[in-house]
Amino acid sequence: MASSFKTISPIDGGVFVERDHASERDIARAIGAAAGAGAAWRRTPLAARAELCSAAVDSFVAMKDGIAEEITRQMGRPIRSSPGEVGGFEERARHMIAIAGDSLADIAIAPKDGFTRFIRHEPLGVVFVIAPWNYPFLTAVNSIVPALMAGNTVILKHSVQTPLAAERLAQAFQGLPAGVFQYLHLNHADTERVIASGDIGFVAFTGSERGGVMVEKAAAGRFIGVGLELGGKDPAYVRADADIGHAIENLCDGAYFNSGQSCCGVERIYVHADVYDDFVEGFAALASAYRLGDPMDPETTLGPMVNTAAADYARGHIEQALAAGARALIDPGSFPADRAGTPYLAPQALIDVDHSMAVMKDETFGPVAGIMKVKSDEDAISLMNDSAFGLTASVWTRDEDAALAIGGRVETGTWFMNRCDYLDPALAWTGVKDSGRGCTLSDIGYGHLTRPKSFHLRTRL
Image 1 (spheres, helix red, strand yellow):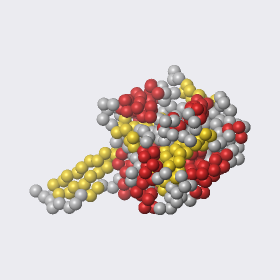
Image 2 (cartoon, rainbow, N blue to C red; image 1 turned 180 degrees about the horizontal axis):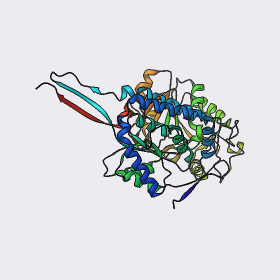
Image 3 (cartoon, rainbow, N blue to C red; image 1 turned 90 degrees about the horizontal axis):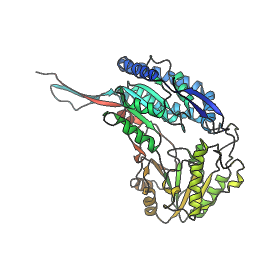
Image 4 (cartoon, rainbow, N blue to C red; image 1 turned 45 degrees about the horizontal axis):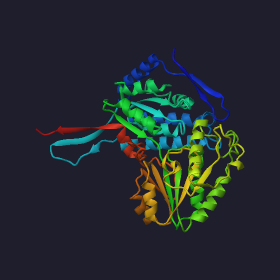
C-alpha cells in the first residue's frame, strides 16, 4: 500500500490536498512506459511534436482561473498575482516551441570535397523533471516543453506542496501519445531510486542546495546529465545616476513578490552614498504600503509564506541581524496579520547591515532585504561577489557602458540593468557557484537536453 501525504495550505493550516505516493509498481510502470514510448516519439516529425505541444499549451491556458486559485491555496501567493504564472508558462512554452526548428536543426560543417559532414541533436531518452512549489509551473515549463520538443519523454515529480500542478500539467498534455508525458507523486527515497534507474537519461532539478546534492549523489556513476537550478542571494546595485523612483518601485517588487520566495528574488541592495538616504526613505515607505493577509482577498499584496518553519527561518535572520546592530525600517506592528507561530510575515528592510550577518550571506527566501551604503562601483562589485551564490544580479543606472563594464566583473548567471527578478526565455537561464549548473531555455537550453551525434559520410571513393 502506497503511503499518503497531505498538502497543508498556509492560508489557514487546513489540509487542502491528500494523495497517495506512487507505489513501486506505479514507478516501474511509468519508467517502462516512458522508455518504451521514446523510439516512436523521437521519430515523430518536429512539426507534429510542435502541434501537440502547442495544443497542450492551449489547454493549459484555458484552465487559467482554476490553476490560479490552486496555486494560491497550495502555497499562499495572492490571488491577484497567481494568474501571471499561467501567462509566464505560456510565454516560455510558446517561445521554446517557436525556436525548436532552428535550435534542433543539423549543424552544417564547412564543405569538404567528397564528404558530407554535419552534427545532429539527438534526444537523451527519459528526462526526469523535479519541480519546486514556489513557482510550480514556471519552473517546470523550463524543462518539460523543450525536452518534449527535442524528442525526449518526460516524467515529472512535483513538490508535495503543489501536487495539483503535476496533475494539471498531465491534464493539459493528455493529447500526447501514451507514455510521452507522465507524473509521479514521490517521496524522497523513491525520487532517488528513480534517478538511479537505468532508464533515466537526464535529471532537471530546481530546488535547494541540499536537494541538488541529493540529485548528484543519486546520479553518481550513471554518466547522465544533471541540470541544477538552485538557490540565490541576488544583489542589486543602485548607482548615483540611477532613476531612484524606478529603482525603488522595481526593487521592492523584486524583494517582496511571492513573499520573497524566489531563487532570483532580490535579497541584498547596495546603494551609492550620494543617493542612499533618498533610496532608503522611499523604499521603506513603499514596503510599508504592502497589505499582508488572506491571499484569496484581491486586495492582499503579500500572502503568507509557504509554512511556519519558512517564516520562522526568515524571522531568525531578522532577529540575528538586529542583535548584531542592524536597524529595521519597517514596524511589523503596522501589519496586524504578522503573528509569531504562523506563516504570515510582514515585509522587512534592514540597514546598518554587513556581511558578517546571515541576512547578507545566507539565502533567506523570505520578504526581507538588507540595504548597505557603498562609496563606489568597486565597493559594490566586491560586495556583490562576496557570496556563495550567483544566479542573477542587477544594476540601476542611466549609463549602459558602466552597466556592461560592471556586469562583466560580477559573478552571476544573468546580469540586469534597470530591472530584476525576470526570466527572458530567449536568454540562457543559468547560475554559477552554488546557484547550480547547466542551462534551461534559449537555444543553449536545447543543447543540454540533447547529445551531439556526428555524421561523417565519404561520398566519393
